[in-house]
Amino acid sequence: MKNTWRFGDLEFKYVREVLDSGFGSSTSGSMNNRFETAFAEKIGAKYAVTFNSGTSTLHAALEAVGVGYGDEVITAPLTVISNLDVILAQNAVPVFADVDGNTFNIDPADVARKITPRTRAIMPISLYGQSCDLDPLMELGRKHGIPVINDAAEAFGTLYKGRPIAEIADITSYSTENSKHITTGDGGIVVTNNEEYASKMRKFGSLGYAALKAQDGRIRSNKDIFQNPSYKRHDAFGYNYRMPEVAAALGLAQTERMDWFLDLRIAITGMYLAAARECDYLIPQKVPKGDRNTYWTVPFRYERSDVSWQDFRMKYTEFGGDGVYAAWALLYHETVMSSGAWKKRCPPLYDGMDFPTEGLCPVAEGLQPKLMQFVNNYGSIEEAEPKVDALLKTIRHFA
Ligand SMILES: Cc1ncc(COP(=O)(O)O)c(C=O)c1O
Image (cartoon, rainbow, N blue to C red; front, side, top):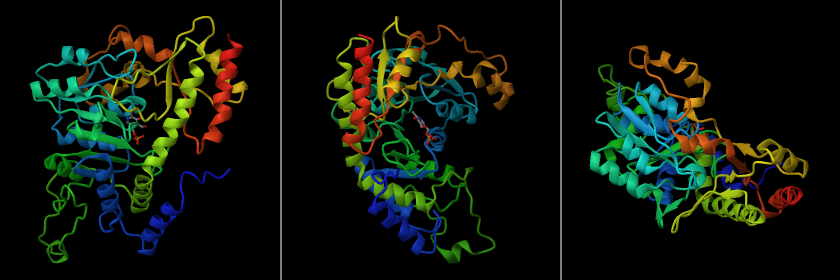
């Protein structure tokens, strides 16, 4: 079946422009720049920098705020492995703060308890499209001089107390991987209002080229200067995390179509939420007043003990539903952590450090096995209807 709703004429038009140009690179073409400019404006921030993933954006964000050897980074354990990997990549120390059992997001009170003189960044996640509780997190950040990096990989267009989240944190990071609201196949884009952070992130993601600027990804602004044997090209350390121009063309088109994608996911989610109200054991993610959850997926806390999570899932699938998704294992339960493999990243620092597998974040530990996510990434209401119907049938079956 063709998924023509995901990529339409606009995507083909912009990809064609890149190919017609003779296939520019991200350091010579203009598509990345056009995507960044459009995205920054749409999302409500001054600077945007494209990357090849929403993992490399987080890595660059940590670098930009100065996270390095032995620094502590507070994050939630209920997230994708990326948040852990980028902390380890900086030879920093992950510190896990518990989550709220209703919003599923990091609990600012626990963050406050975990701040030490070594804390160098707070990296909350705006999980499933719901903003983390930014006011108290920003207050903590300001009070202790610690930057806040909001991992909004799943939270395009999300509002916190009526404000676009990108206006609030020091840095806000998005993923454009395949399952996200807007996609470039794989990719990421990170935004900030801080020029220094923007330029540091861009350099980190593009081999530390000296010519790079907060709003300019070109590495040769002047050919006569660049093509000179004595010219020194790199003034910072960096990786090559750049987004290809073809992907940026998709990103530009998807940014222009973002509202359509968001509205559709929210509408489909509303159908699931209405169906779930027929029972009292599918507890939806809490959306505090004034917030807008854009629902990367439809998450519930499954609170029924006489029908197992797996049995509910199987019955839903039998009735024609798409597989219900489970949450990731908590970061400190992942094998890379429990086996000690993570310590190989920096033995002098990590040997002797251990994370208990129980009791570190009790709310997250209780919540994670109960989370159930329904698919809302369909191209139309009509396509979603039989899936929502399958949920109703499952609820009625187990009534
Ligand atoms: C919360 C969260 N953070 C980070 C990422 C990493 O993004 P990517 O897969 O583009 O590296 C993802 C997506 O997979 C995510 O859902």
